[in-house]
Length: 162
View 1 (cartoon, helix red, strand yellow):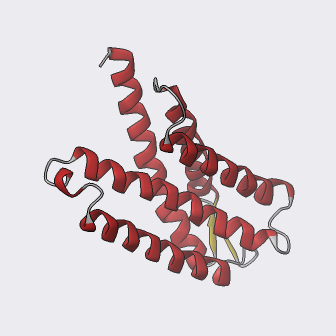
View 2: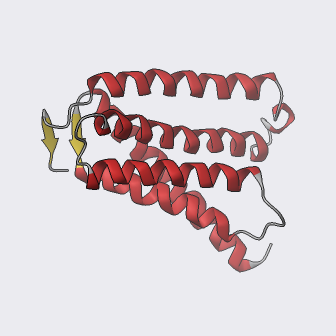
View 3: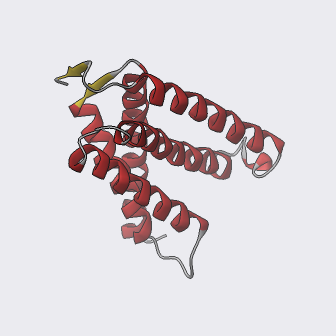
């Protein structure tokens, strides 16, 4: 692996991990009807950066990772539209909440894939039942968080400065 690809890999991974942590915080805030501009901005910037930097890797042809990145970017575009243009009014509130949680899901989905591909103790289970169970648990947790976020998130209730 070339030095530039190694640097890109580490940068992409670091951005992804920051996006996941920020996404978990933002989702927790949605579930408690709060908004933190800092955490939300950090999540949105790093989630977008993660998807964009994924396209800088040398691939031949379209890969599943690129498809996931494209879907994630489309969802994030709608989230930004809901937040900045429609100001979370009406249905845009639940579109925003569900989009944020869906964006976090894609990050977690890829995290599980990468863990099973690159952690030696997990590698034998890549694509096997333990991998599928891990992905199912992530999906169930995200669906639960998404339903809760849509039901509880009311941006006018409380805005946090940080």
